[in-house]
Amino acid sequence: MKLSLTGKTAVVCGASQGLGLASARELALLGASCILLARNEKLLETAVASLDTSQGQQHNYYVADFSEPAKVKATIQAIVDDQFVHILVNNSGGPSSGPILAAEGGAFLKAFEMHVVCNQLLTQAVVPGMKATGYGRIIQIISTSVKVPIKNLGVSNTIRAAVANWAKTMANELAPFGITVNNVLPGAMTTDRLKSLFKATGEARGVPEETIAEEWRQEIPMQRFGDPSEFGAAVAFLASPAAGYITGINLPVDGGKTPSL
Image (cartoon, rainbow, N blue to C red; front, side, top):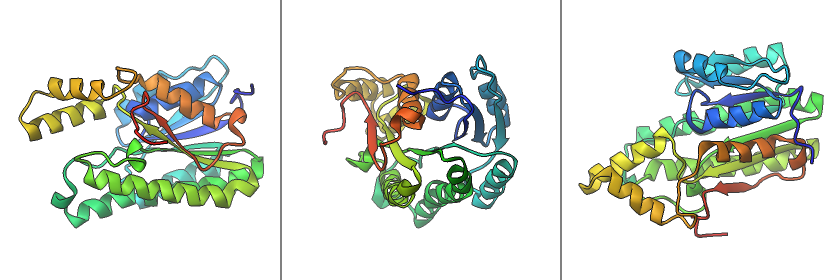
């Protein structure tokens, strides 16, 4: 099986921590040189230092705030002006939790810019290089909510579905060039994001967050939360040559929790 990414460059968004960083680590283990994007420079410095370099990789980072699409566009343009990008992992922090009826219109607009508009700008910038090199992998980190909406994540459910449909459309357009576009859908992974959801849900119900955590764990067929490295491994596989005939899919990494095919 051809898994090596030696000689490939990956841009990984939202990679200063959590699932973005976990994905970058697995890509680096396969030999990719990673360019990390996020808004916190201190965390980015630490993240880059944690990536494997045993195969001669050269990692780097750029500071980019996804609430400012124009600056994200300028950042990715600076990257592609300097080198070809073979792999793009689109990822950004999820919208705040809460019922959809309570959400202000501005929350939807902000989330749409961060998740759909930024994905579009990043993809437009890297695709010419992918076509030129004959290798392209575009992967979105989204949510299992694109299959089954998650309670109390009204804005997130809406925007994640928009990203999934954007990606499927892009997959069909880029397939003739051998560029794949796929979505990886994390379930309950042991990240700060999950902890924040436990806390918010617990506060809304007036119960300890530990109670929420145990309820959620019981709903997972594997009876445990996922490790971020397990999620990163799925991203790395889809980025590899071995996944060249897989495109336009939504891949749950959730321990079997999603109650649909």
